[in-house]
Length: 80
Image (cartoon, rainbow, N blue to C red; front, side, top):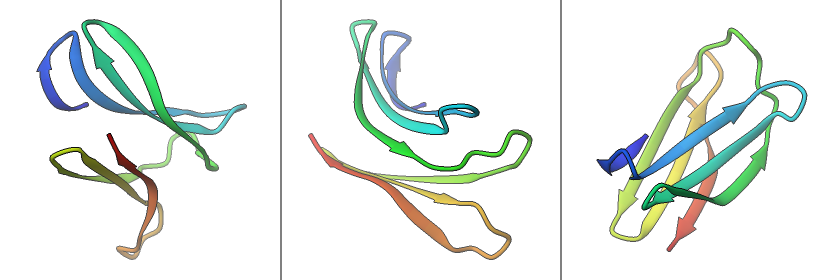
C-alpha cells in the first residue's frame, strides 16, 4: 500500500500467485478499487521479493528485485 490517505483511498501492488501469476497495480478511491495495470510474471510462493515504488505527482513506476544481486526490473510505468 502506498499514497495512503485513509482506508478507502490508497494505491496498492497486489501479487496473485499460482495459477494466475499476476501482479496488479490498484487504485482505491472512496472504497472502490480499480485495476490500473496488470503484469503476468512468475511468482514463487515463499520467495521474498523487493519492491520499489517511485511516485512523482501523477507518475508511478514500480520495480521488482527477484534475484540476489540488486537488479530491479520495471513492472509498471503509469501516468494518471
